[in-house]
Amino acid sequence: MILRLLAGSARGRLLLAIGLFLALALPWMIYPPIAMDIACWALFAVSVDLLLGFTGLLSFGHAAFWGSSAYVSGLLAVHVGLPFPVAVLGGALFAAVIAVPIGYLAVRLSGIYFAMVTLAFAQMIYFIANQWRDVTGGENGLQGIPREMFGVDLSDSFVFYYVGLPIVLLGLLLAWRIVRSPFGRVLVSIRDNPSRARALGYPVDRYRLLSFVLSAFLAGLAGGLFAISHGFASLQEVYWTTSGNAVMMVVLGGIGTLWGGVIGAALVVQLNDYLSTSEFDGIGIVTGSIFIVIVLVFRKGIWGTARDLLAPRLKRKRPGGAKSPGDDPAPAPAPDVNAPA
Amino acid sequence: MLQQAFNGLVGGAFYALLALGLSVIFGMLGVVNFAHGAFYMLGAFTSYVLLDSYGVNFWAALVVVPVALGVVGIVLERLFIRRLTPLDPLYNFLFTFGLTLILQDLVKREYGVQSQPYPRPSALSGTLDLGLFTYPAYQVFVLGVSVLVCLLVWFVLVRTRVGMVVRAATERPELTRALGIDVGRWVTPVFGFGIALAGLAGVLAAPMRAVNPLMGADLIIVVFAVVVIGGLGSLFGSVAAGFTIGLVSALGNYYVPALSQTLVFILMAAVLLWRPAGLFGREEAL
Image (cartoon, rainbow over all chains, first blue to last red; front, side, top):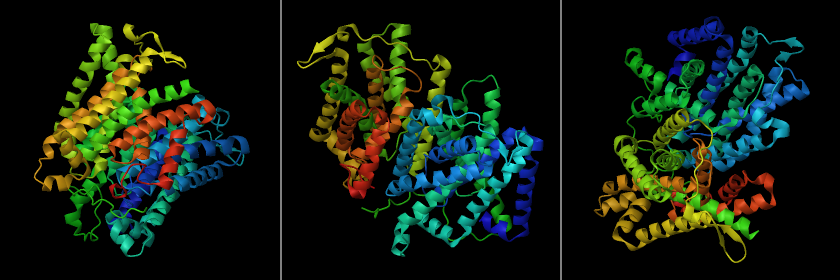
């Protein structure tokens, strides 16, 4: 896989260098706040792909973690006055903590039911955020989140990008390490054949839960940074369309490619920015159409397609059996017959 | 108290109709139709437009709108859903999610986000004396229609040959096919029927709920929770859970107002903890 390339080959190092260069050059090329948005959404999308592409679980409720971390990071920065990286870390830890009960219940179901249950729990978090006005500000959102660290004012978006970027890069590095680790290989085996993984003695549900919590932590890092960058956290952050957006970035970039989500995020954020500044009123019509077109004819996504085009030239041996939902046409996976009682 | 319980049953009537449609579609096609809420919204909006622009009254809408949406569903299944059913179910989920965004924003562009008025049909504008308390006649009518439709569906499923085939195909598609029954023939009509049920719920909702583009989206997520509680793939479970959840959340709202919106999700968590397959679901259906 591409990850293997990144570690060893010259081409991998080249890709890594290009990626880092683009990340550093981004605020010169586009409006810096948008660059920060892209970085945050990229980490969010990668966190969703960690579950969808490498554990085989579609979470349609990741806004719960992105959004709750946005609120908690904001609250920590407003009321406690913590330096923003600490506030973001606090938010991400909070997201990981609430992911434990949600994940514990959700991993009892697999496939499409998992998506339904995570969506439902995320909606519960949305209702709580909406009702708990004293803390979250209800429909007004949590406003006036300071953007500073140890008394240094970071309100310049250009400067803030470079201070915030390391958090995103560390998050991406963590995701990459997880996928490359023995733990990540077990996750892939669970994705491909849960029954066999269980027969080999792996506690499938515990692995799924851990993957879910790690993914929530990464989504939380991204969401917290997003809130600090914008100076407010709104109900939009915990709404189901936010979960849908992240899933769309992953599918557009390519499920199970990890870095595809980064590309998906870059495109979708720019598209949304373009649409919201244009006269056209109906972002949903455009994003919904893109969703439909990708699902109908472009299921491998951008990274997946590029990888397949490059594959013959690289004479790459594909690790056996690493089939992702993006590898079409694949038969519908066998139902998880021995789901736990 | 009793009145609260009745309110709950009326709310449950909508859950039941929507959950029934979702379950029928899920059972037959293995598709979780995210756009179900959007079709409910379209049902309400179409009746509003029919009345407002063409003077078509409620009673006509009650028949015309579900049929029209059913046809839309059939076309949708033939053109798109069918291509994705052999793949991982998540693709159809994402497809219907995209469809929801489109439908919602199309309506929003045309009519804005504010709620449109829809008068109650004059025959049902009064109140009924139910002995212990009086109650708006329209709400009683909604409850009656929902119960009637659920009973009708039950009758068709249990007492007719068509129902037998659909039931068999819903619960054991491979086995039914192996017995020489053409399951594929029933897929499209069943999908259309499920969408028609969502449309019917929408028409019924128009005179008593706010008719706006977002009315379906939040509701459908609650209905997902209802379906998970009732039992995945169990038609009876969906209907029973629909009415029960309506009742329980109304009573919960009465005693603990702070929990009104979250209660259904707490119930879902409890059911997942205790019986992951849902109250009436089979373990192997997971």
